[in-house]
Image (cartoon, rainbow, N blue to C red; front, side, top):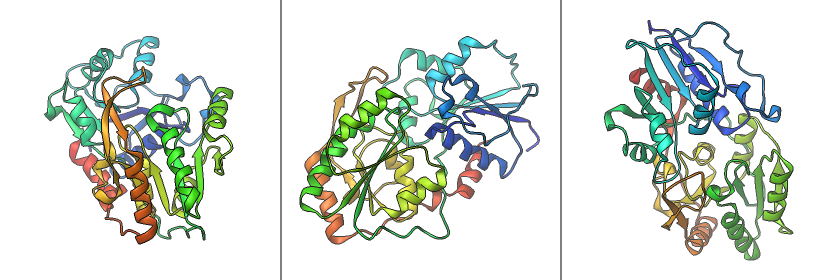
Length: 337
């Protein structure tokens, strides 16, 4: 590629947004050498910092400017920095995901600043089409690593629940996930693991309140991408009774290591989950979180329990998700550039 390109995002951040951004850097690096501008400086929490990507400190005069961030982060940074000069030759690409049926007006304004919008799923694309022409929106799913040697499963059937408290307790629907795990473990001899990462005393309090005295193993710490997928691979099943996902990264990672996902049959995970035996019924409900707008899913607890029991009793062969490999996503990126 002859044009110069700069990627802007949370290159040195422990959140899933940082992890995903680093995966796209790897994809871009497979066919070009982009500069990477790290937004970690704007995150006022050193507990989230990692030192993985050397920061770019040169001039920003690139032909293509790629932003991979959230609406609030982009809007907050825009208030703090002087706008860069931009002429018609510069191509501005914004990578965003969203997790409810409607956008806020300020987020619509943000999307309209970009020549193109890239996103992780058809679900997100349909939301963004409320304010942008379909031709300006490209679906570029998150790349997933496929380990050569898959982790050995725990001896005892283990159900995994994953999600950071900081991400959104409401959207991730922790209470329902834990309630279903509690019901299942009453009459099935299984282990339950809750993997999370708290960042404050308030989040630690939320976690203790959620788990209570239940017999759940809690892993509350940051883990690298490799260690996270190793944990997922040791478990037999991952449960995600989410209200909405822009993509569902951990569910895709589970399928790459033969860990069976049971998940709400709604939103971004339908990009790669097609088996109805693994998709939990739901009804649409009004959003009850001020960060989001519109509607999202209310998963059916009884159906979740039935589907978990069916898998425990009969097992399940997973469909291939090879189309999410680094090489395939790299080719998709190159084609869209």
